[in-house]
Length: 215
Ligand SMILES: *[C@@H]1O[C@H](CO)[C@@H](O)[C@H](O)[C@H]1NC(C)=O
Ligand SMILES: *[C@@H]1O[C@H](CO)[C@@H](O)[C@H](O)[C@H]1NC(C)=O
Ligand SMILES: *[C@@H]1O[C@H](CO)[C@@H](O)[C@H](O)[C@H]1NC(C)=O
Ligand SMILES: *[C@@H]1O[C@H](CO)[C@@H](O)[C@H](O)[C@H]1NC(C)=O
Ligand SMILES: *[C@@H]1O[C@H](CO)[C@@H](O)[C@H](O)[C@H]1NC(C)=O
Image (cartoon, rainbow, N blue to C red; front, side, top):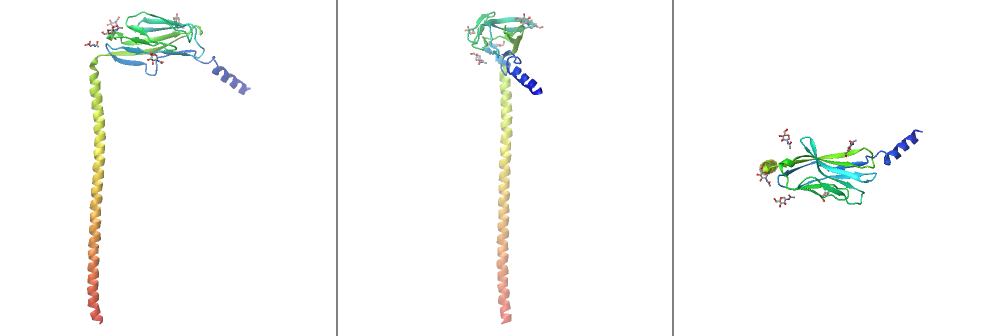
């Protein structure tokens, strides 16, 4: 009995029942920082596991709380070309297939803000989906960031250099120490060798002294 219920749930979730029909996505990084005067891509794509029919989409710009329609369009089916109308200057629709991205040409500081990519698939009644992409328009003051990265890079490089220098110094010191130790050993060996010869000599001396005593 329990098994049957479980199987029923698995089946119903595998089908269209559990799946989130339409999904709008602005990508993994939902913002971009761009210098005024440049041209930026506002990315958006949709996926739908139940398919689409006359999918309505639009882009809206949040201008101090009032939503301004940037562009809107209808995609009759997955394979058909979208019908798009553009409501704002310097905007170009560059989407195709499941891609409803737009280009913003020659951006100004007023273009900075939140852009909502909205989608409504009549196949799912009354459900709306959207994703928000943020555009940050910056002055060419980016040099400050560059110097900062250079500072960080040189700091990191300096730290690595210091570490390498330290390791080299350590190796050198170890080498010198080992050399000194080797020398000391040599000294010990040679001195003990001398001692031995002395002993031997003294021994022979002793022997030679002893032999005549014995003799
Ligand atoms: C960007 O804005 C700055 C400051 O307003 C201006 O001096 C500069 O010319 C602008 N750059 C472009 C490419 O429009
Ligand atoms: C948005 O709001 C700010 C401050 O509330 C105001 O200075 C600015 O003029 C407004 N911009 C528009 C386009 O209404
Ligand atoms: C963007 O600016 C360039 C240079 O100022 C100009 O030639 C071009 O027509 C502009 N593009 C749009 C779409 O406004
Ligand atoms: C959508 O189309 C634009 C322009 O052709 C492209 O740069 C972007 O990578 C596309 N995005 C996706 C998710 O396919
Ligand atoms: C979905 O969006 C439409 C406008 O396209 C709006 O009329 C409707 O109220 C919205 N529905 C929901 C549930 O938000």
